[in-house]
Length: 127
Picture 1: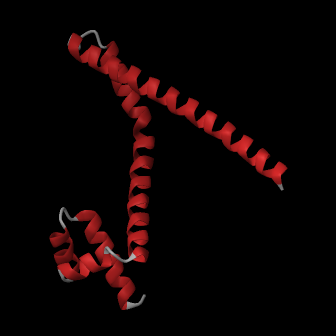
Picture 2: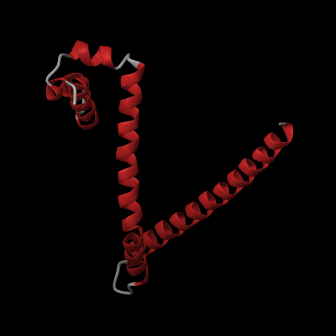
Picture 3: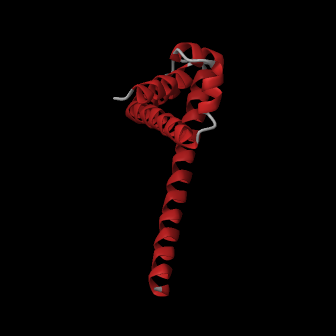
């Protein structure tokens, strides 16, 4: 790997993990003016955004893996007769909210798929 590529990777990692540009510069071992200049470079910004998306994808995957455990915990608290009524109500409300959100997302995905399919058919007809 070239030194410039290593510096870019260090800076991207620092930007993702540091709370400020100053802290990121220090962590990456470069000056603040270099950080600001790199953030104006469209290729660097694209690589930085991709790294952020990759990090978010990993976080989403971890949440998906744990979703069944979350649901079981909500169910256990909501149905535990020894739990405080406020805890039961809170768990039930959160469970219902999550369920409603999943249904909404599923409906939106189905509608979007249908729109994409229709747009593809229209595009094929125009050719």
